[in-house]
Length: 417
Ligand code: FIX
Ligand code: ZN
Image 1 (cartoon, rainbow, N blue to C red):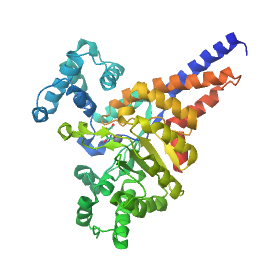
Image 2: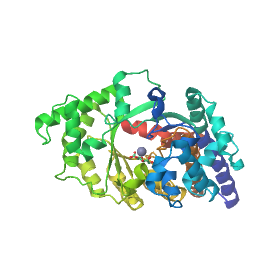
Image 3: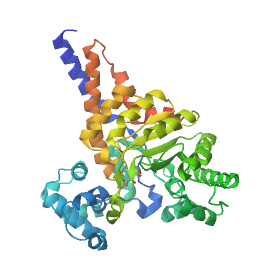
Image 4: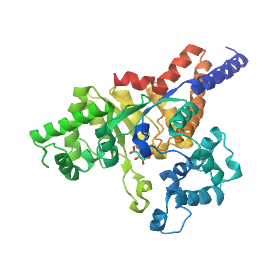
């Protein structure tokens, strides 16, 4: 192909990629959103957008008030302060601030008037059922997977009462307290009728499996999930490693469900920041290597928080087909790091990856998280096809559609079955 022809094919393909990525609905495999039946647990609207813990952490870069004074404010007061600090006193450059503006803009609101009371008024007119549909539509999201913890009292009460499921919200069983705080969790299980002791006898393991089975069925879990700190190791003589091996992984095998491991979060580095107080540390990736190698019948969905673990994760995915890499999690969900990670993943493991999840905690955030991700995925994918065109290979429209579907949930579904 002569150079002029190659350039024109590349720009034609880039336009196709943009169109297809924009039009392909995504299945969002990890969020902190809830089925509307959970009532107030489903967060939405301008005040919740502003008090997002990403923005709380950023506001404290500028504020000198004591943390406690901030926590004593009610939600609209906290939102006022964050708006003033991050949007009025400083330009809203950060990714999380930009996200609020992307969201408002997509909803048709004029944020540049800097009129927070007017924004509040607009949101007050919505009914949540209609607003869910509007947000999913604007975000191009067809389904969201929740994060469901039986250890959360308000959430557990709703499951126990029972409700009619909204088919757009699927469930994932979150088990952090089981692995990270067994000493505190064992008495809770006892209180719910599972006769466990602190030491991991056969009887206790059977009871833990009973608990996992009951909740997997109750919530119709698509996968189980846990976040683990940088110190997590496997094999190891810890409750986390032993419970994983003896109870959780056998349960996943029995039910044919993947286990999601979210590695590298250092919980409560600064407890005064509450939910905003978690940090990051590099994980021991040999632990994951040992898990994938020792348990070929288990499937592992994995995202890692530390930038320095990303390359090793991709290499492990080349070695173990029971490992599916997903998402640019939390501190990595910023354009510079996401661009690097997405390129690296496509270069090392092709399309056998789920490049992004939203981690949305507030419904409206689906809009910005997916707009920003789509833009970046479009750019990276168009570049990769351009490299192919340079070799004389021309991707066809149907092939691009197939590839984008894989990235937006297809590869995940295939991995799970
Ligand atoms: O552990 C997790 O699932 C994290 O995503 C959250 O706990 C975290 O607070 C968050 O919202 C990150 O985006
Ligand atoms: Zn999360």
